[in-house]
Image (cartoon, rainbow, N blue to C red; front, side, top):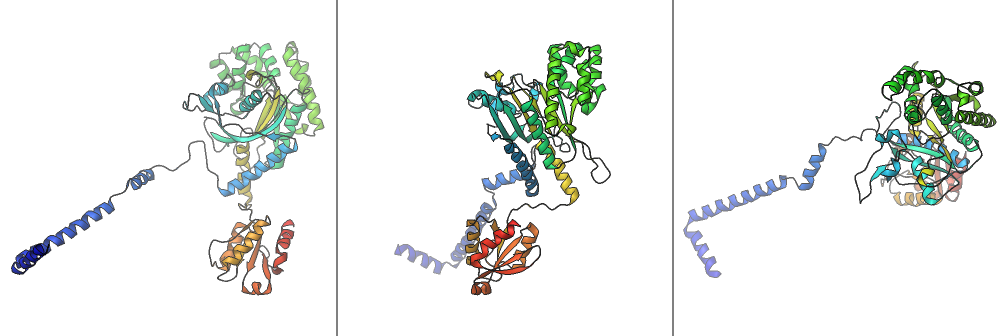
Length: 504
C-alpha cells in the first residue's frame, strides 16, 4: 500500500502533464455524474406518469347523475326530514334492501320498460341488476320473510337507464321515498291513507298548487275490452296511454295503431273515454254508461271509486283529487287503484312559465306482485319523487334570494388575543359535552375580526369570546352575531345561558 502511494506521489512530481490529465479526468467524471443524476431526477416516476395520464381524463359526473353542494344538501335534508316525519306520523317503520337484486327477479315480466334496467356483469355465478324501483325489492322482502302485514317506508337510490332531463328533474340515479301498506284490509281504507300521505307531504313542502289524479286499472280494463282492445294488448296499451298528457291524443292514437298494432276503430272507441276527467259527476256518468256497464270489472272499480271518494272527503282532501281516465301508470304490476300528483304550472316570477316537471308523486295498488314470489299479500303504496320536488324548491329559493344555512353550528369559540388555544380547546370540549354544536378556527392565534367575519358568513348565531380580562374575571363574553351585543356571562353559567338563547 505504501509502495503504491509512493509511486503515485513520485509520478505526480516528475510528470506535471500526467497530473493535469488526472485533474481533467476527475472533473469530467464529476460532470458526467451530475448530468446522470440530473437526468434521473427529471425522469418521472411511474406514479407521476400515472398522474399525468389521469390529468387528461375529463372530470365530469356520468350522464344522468350529479353532485350536490352543501347548499343543495341543506335543502335536500330538509325535504327528506319533512317526508320521513310524515311517514312516521302514519306509523310506518323503515327497512333497507340491497342496491342490486337477482336479474330474473327484477325482469320477471313486471315491466315493458325492462330495457331501462341496468344489468351488471356476472359476478360469482349470479346475474344481477341494479334496482329499478323500491317496490319489487319490497315484494321480495315480504315473500322471503313470510310477512303478511306490514306498514313500511324506504328511502334509497334507484337506477334507470333512460334519457335524462335536468330541467324536468329526471335522472338515471335518483332517490325514491316509498310508503307502503301490506296486508288484507277492507276496501279503500289503506288506499285513502296513501293519498292522504301524498297530500300532507306536498302541502308541507310548499312547492306550489298540485292536483292528485286517480284512476283504476279495472276501469281501464273494462273500457278497453268493451271497445275491442284484446286482453293481450292491455299492458302495452296502458304504456302508450300513459303518454297522453305529454304528447296529446293524436300522437297516442298514432302509436297505438302503427306501433302497437291496434285496430283504428278500437282506438277511436276508447278516445272519448280516456280524455274524460272529473269528480263525483264523472263516477255517476260512468256507472250509467250502457257500454261500460257490460264490464263487471269496470263496475267493481267504479264501486270502489265511490267508496274512496267518501273517505277522501272525510280526510278533507277531495278538492285536490280528480278521476282522470287517461292515467294508466306504465308499470305492469299495478292491479287496481292508481294515482299520481302533478304540480299546476305557476309563473316563475319573471312573467314566464316555470319549467315543465312530470308527476312529483305516484303509486297504486299491486295485489299480485308479492303473490308472484309465492306469498299472497295485497299491497298499496305511494312514492314521492324527491328529485323533481327538489328541482322546483331549489328554483323557488333562488328566486326568493333566501339565504340557506349549510351549517348547524350554534356557537363559535373565539379568542380575543394571542396564546389562548388551550383555553379555547377546553371551552369547546365543554360545549360539545353539553350537546351544543360548536366550532373554532384551526389556527393558534386567529384574529378576532376574522373569527367574527366567519360567523357572519356561515350564519353562526353566537360567539363565546375568551381573553386575559375574561380569564381574570372568571367570565366568558357572549356575543349575539345578529345584534352585535355582548354580555359577560360567569363561566359556570355559560352553557345554561347559551341553551336559553338558542331556545328563543
